[in-house]
Image (cartoon, rainbow, N blue to C red; front, side):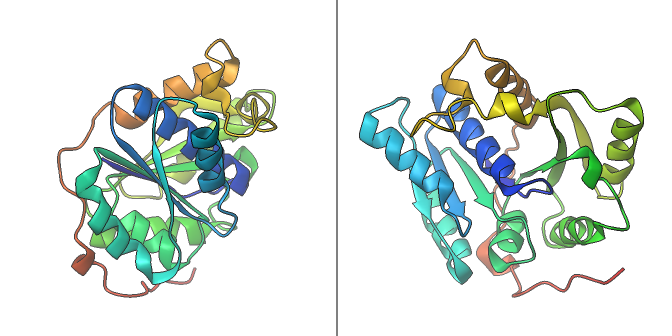
Length: 233
């Protein structure tokens, strides 16, 4: 199963979600590939530190940039049971092709960012990806501060998610301070501290992401027809 992180929240949140999902999936006994398609390469560095420190379970990380992602993914996918792709979430080639080849897109989104007019570009990118990949399931995840969002903010989040075909809002709410546990410790993440609030939140999100594991194979590279046009608002 291929899961792409396409963030509408600060990039740190996307990387943390990618790391935790990859670790939890590997902990379940799956062979996991973590692809880092971001400019910062934080996930790849995190995985390198885990390997250096011999922290289990084992997972493989690769850096991939530019137009090489579809070829690299098609070459490596048969060797792994699961792939998690961290992207910058913009309109770059990496994010577009990662969405087209995924079964699930996880989109962390801060409540204040759930503005259709201000952030229509993200909606357009996700809908455009579904034109090439009709089986793509889009799961928006509330990435909040220390406190839960107000009911009106959650309502706005649901309305925003409803603008995307097959889009929905996860029941899980991620609190970024809790998710940051271990961020100052090389190779660690919140799920390493299984008694922490961040670990509990990521375990709940993991169940939502993988609850309906798709048996549909990923879209083939030849389904990607160059840079996709994103319509204006």
